[in-house]
Amino acid sequence: MFDVLVIGAGHAGIEACMAASRMNKKTCIVTLNIDMAGSMPCNPSIGGPAKGIVVREIDALGGLMPIVADKTALQFKMLNTTKGPGVWSMRVQSDKEAYKKEMKKVLLNTPNLTVIEKAVHSVLIEDGKAKGVLCTDGTKIESKTVVLTTGTYMTSTILRGHTATSSGPEDQITVNTLSQSLRDAGIKTFRLKTGTPARVLTDSIDFSKTEPQPGTNEFLRFSQTTKKEDVLPFEQQSVCHLIYTQPETHKIINEHLTDSAMYSGLVKGVGPRYCPSIEDKLVRFADKERHQLFLEPESKSLDTTYIQGFSTSMPIEVQEKMVHSLPGLENCVIKKYAYAIEYDAIDPLQMKPSMENKIVENLFTAGQVNGTSGYEEAAGQGLMAGANAALKIDGKEPFVLRRDEAYIGVMIDDLTTKGTNEPYRLLTSRAEYRLLLRHDNAEQRLLKKGYEIGLVSEQRYQNFVKEQEEIEKAKEQLSEVHIKPSQQVDEYLQNLGFESLSRGCSELELIKRPKVTIKGLSSITGVEFDDEINKAIEIEVKYKGYIDKAKRDAQHLQKMDEVRLPKDLDYEHMDNLSLEARQKLSQIQPMTLGQASRISGINPSDIAILAIYMKK
Image 1 (cartoon, one colour):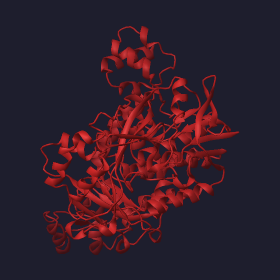
Image 2: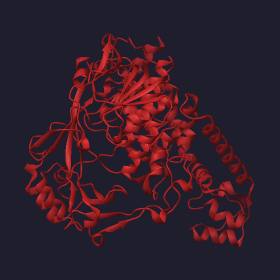
Image 3: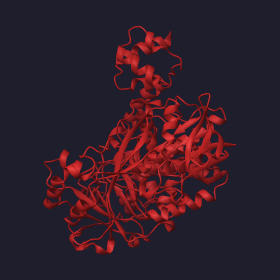
Image 4: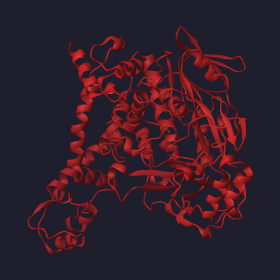
């Protein structure tokens, strides 16, 4: 008998089983093929806008993805640096083969974790509770809790042109019985679609016709535990390349639209709005003359390049013409053809904020099976599901993050209050408190929470406490450094576009000005700290007014989320509630007044009535 049983070893499953095992639970992960653990069937990268901050949050909660992403990265890049820190985000180009090997190695050597290679036929459910799984070979594996992280493997179908093939991603098998066992228990499922571009032989590309896209030449990392010597030096990092679709590309696609699985009527599932296929882009953005594409290396051990932004479900013979119409790819050899994939997902409105299913007790779900897209979204959910499964066993309160605490909190709140009918992708625009949810402050926001529930080690926590003390000491030192008007100071300020200093002030006050930095003033003051301390202080000081306002706004949300709503509240017979509010509240059964206020179709007047009712 296991405490926590995880189905699937994708990005969600890995974080779920690692979280549960770190919390000293007897954990099992069941996977079709351990060699595919942490597989990247789509883009070979980790991070990006909003997503990169999720990876930082996973690190602050003791997760594995950021550590392995750093260790196996081919290129590091910080995005949006010309904008404010609320949208800074890191992305790494990953060595997808090295990433899988490292994940397999960690899983097979983690205490409290058993790895079993089998296909799961169905979830064992008795009296409305998950009790384990039944495998296709007849083996029963019993467990107190089950975490379902099957990704795109439930009743999945590969689509190209007019052809549909029952298969999982990357020629792996699919399981056709699992989702039916969930439906039999009353869980709703629906079809979603995603896709992936072709891979071409790197040696067959003419890179002279492309625009090089190097990484960022500074020490970057997802995990605070990563040391400089652990990552690939900048001069050894890979370079990605930018190209654009051509008029001929558009002509070929438009002539063959009805051959695409998407437009031939073969596709039934809804595809991702923010990562559409190239044919969908041409239809939706018909006025655009060209679309940018990135050529990205997949692995040092492979000779393949990924065409980012060129996802399609066209037949193979059409794909040949499409790819060869692109600059630098006129004579390239296609190693793997693009495809679309349809699969079963679970209605996330049937999920509690703790990731536990509302219909079947002790069943937790995470990742693409919840209707999301992206490795990072999956990993964040997996970590939360694994942690909450462990807490459920101990009879403790669930671990739920608010919208002002983490992008992970934003994502789970969106899923459980609004649901989704398309693959959900995290965007910075989804977070109303994004200035609080920054790349640089993930540890300050979450590490203590992770430590308190057993996700973060004592040593890691003590290191963090020490680092925070160093930052406070540095701020105190800067407040005591008095800068007087002088020729040297005037020249520094004038070079940045400021007038001369009219009066003396502390260095802490002076760095409030844009472009004024601790490092820039060091030749005048003789005071400097390491780059991370400098950056932490500068962001806090320069954006203090905005950050304080965001915190005040978030306090209102926090107060509403502190008002718990009883599970058995009869919304249908509550006087003065609108008809839509009664239906939505009865369906979703929000846990707090704050969650109720964020449900689509719930008006402020409905919330006022609920608030009055709760006071009574």
